[in-house]
Amino acid sequence: MTVKLTLLSGIGSLVWGTLLAAMRVSPVPLMRGFGTAYVNIVRNIPLTVIIIFTSLGLADIFGVTMGASDFKVQGFRLAILGLVAYTAAFVCEAIRSGINTVPLGQAEAARAIGLTFSQTLRLIILPQAFRSVIGPLANVLIALTKNTTVAAAIGVAEAAYLMKEMIENEAQTVLIGAVFAFGFVVLTLPTGLFLGWLSKRLAVKR
Image (cartoon, rainbow, N blue to C red; front, side, top):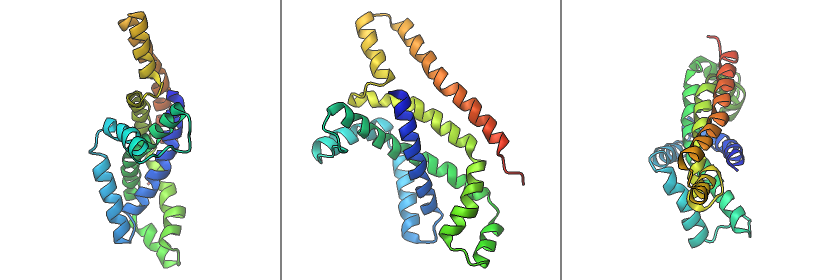
């Protein structure tokens, strides 16, 4: 469950975070304002508050079921929604920092040959930006893996939820805690090492 939450939330965060980054560098003031407001607000709200809001606010008050009739499936999808909404703000800032490393002359050259803003961003700016921020994005992914434990607050049976049940049933707090801690190391350490290697491999030489 933890791996599924991480993978699906990671993909959603990358897509939404990239769109937010595009908004933040957009020439349209309304889009820039929305992107800036979203990032500044969401980054300063605790993840637990966001996750609980998706359950108590969206599901219980507004009746948002995410297309699921089963309570467990609904909780899983709402947890992904909350994780995406939160993590995308950090993905956005990582990608925006990568965009800022691309020389301004490249965007000016693109406009000079008639490319639109979206074409310049898609074909020239973002490919270079992604290569320069693999390391920061790896840190965001590792943080997301650990943040999935917050989903236990709305009853999603991921690692922290299972650990809590096992401790209540077995009363082996230290042993069970150590096993789950080791499990998270197994999940995050290889990811960090691989993406660190990939970052050096694909680094943009300037």
